[in-house]
Amino acid sequence: MSRLTGPAAAAVAALVVAVTAACGGVDEVADPAATPSASRPTSAADRDEPTPTPKATPTPAETAVTSWGPTEAEVAQAASIVATMSTEARAGRVIMVRVAGTTAAAAAGEITDLALGGAILFDDNIEAPRQVRDLTAGLQQVATTTGSPAPLLVGVDQEGGSVARVTAGATELPTYMTLGSAADPALAERAARVSADELRAMGLTVVFAPDADVTIGLADPTIGSRSASDDPALVAEIVQASVRGYLGGGLIPVLKHFPGHGSVPADSHETLPVQTATVDELNARDLVPFRAAVAAGAPSVMVAHIDVTALDPGVPGSLSPAVLGLLREDLGFDGLVFSDAEEMAAVAGAYGVGEAATRALAAGVDVVLMPRDAATAREAIVTAVAGGALPAARLDEAATRVVATALWQARLGAAQPDLATVGLPEHHQVAYDLSIAGLAVVSGPCTGRLVGDTVQVVGGTETDRARFTEAARTAGLPIGPGSVVRLLGGTTGGSGDVVVSLDLPYGLAASEASTARLALFGRTPDAFRALVDVLLGSARGRGSVPVQVDGLPATACP
Image 1 (cartoon, one colour):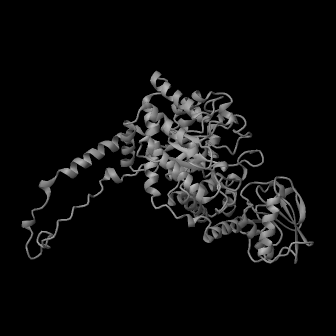
Image 2 (cartoon, one colour):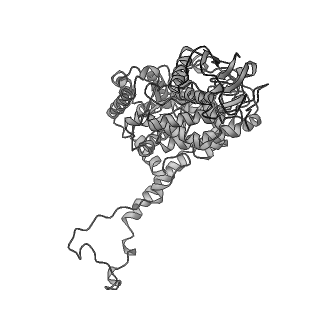
Image 3 (cartoon, helix red, strand yellow):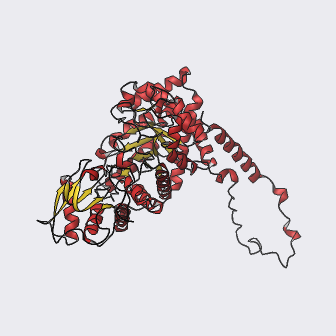
């Protein structure tokens, strides 16, 4: 069972006590006449000036912070807002949809008609930073027509690496595994802060990152370099730092994919993955980063569509009271819980829209993410409450968390950065620093020039080669017949004078290089700039491969 109701009720009670105390207690104020006139300061009345209105001192109830972020007063305010909503409005508030088009007008009808609580943007919603800011501002304006004083939660998948929806004009960050290779929490926090500042400048309020998944290597077909490492303790350290960076920029981070998607051999976009690990095994590996982040105050978690056989065989975790109980009770998480996208095959293939939505809420989820049909999902929630299949208190609790998070974020991110923040040179410097810190030399010289006067780039994608060529020319390294730099775009090996893995490092073990093998963990412009500097000997890669690869050392450089 979840535990918001108790703290929320306590916050309301405390708030009433605080207001009563603020209005009373006059008899306890010292008599000014009892103060010797020689030492008593002159008052405004003595100086014939208007008496200033005293500022109320925040009470403990107003400033006490929950374990997951909002103040108790914000939770109490959210509860009072939810209390004024109809069942239909509460049901809409716990749904986050994928919107259509690049303007708010395309999504206006669904948001207002269903009183939805959130929207998530994808590639087809995004053209440029200014357009995204106009879109998010428009969505917030549309939301005001529903009558709720709390803003929408507007989110995006922006992990870095292969999962980044906002690219044009923004600073591209390399894969999360780069952070594991760098093993530098301060740099992880800086990277998250860069992302937060840019997303907030565009009006986003929620980021579906970081990945708290612990990868198991080649047997992990879904997460891969989206995970920092196969070392649970290292992942935990990097995830905690990322959460600090996002929150420092006023953005709500969502840990994913509980209880861990990096150790299952299937993709929940396509089927229901089966997690066969015991609870003890999960505690020793997959749950370590989640437990550490929750203890450090992470505000939100996404629950994956994974069949955890040790807890609830055959049931997706996002619909399972046992899996949500593990998060709520064992990990002690009181914050906002998202389902993974309910349009994914792991859920949509076996459950109807309405059943999936109501089962997720009944299990303990607070936000039903991306149902295939929001109207059907909302109607099913309303019907389930009316019929008693979904307790009204559970819907109230979920809606209260959504509204409290929105109120908190509005305060946390009130100082929205200017659009000029997006793509700042200093942000690109952070991306470059991250790539250098994470670039691992697994064979060959640790310092000095690795290529001749000219280089020939082969392998990778057309975009990879174009980005490498641009970085080389900018650095004064001619492209032409010469040292062969082979880019590995996947997990298959190759040969060259220098062989560079761009994403996952596994192909390096089967590669032959006459000079060096490098693991870059990124294919962004700044990552290629870092690579070229290492090839020229003007910078040194400082990373260490953060996953076990048979036949491959973590680094050749101490």
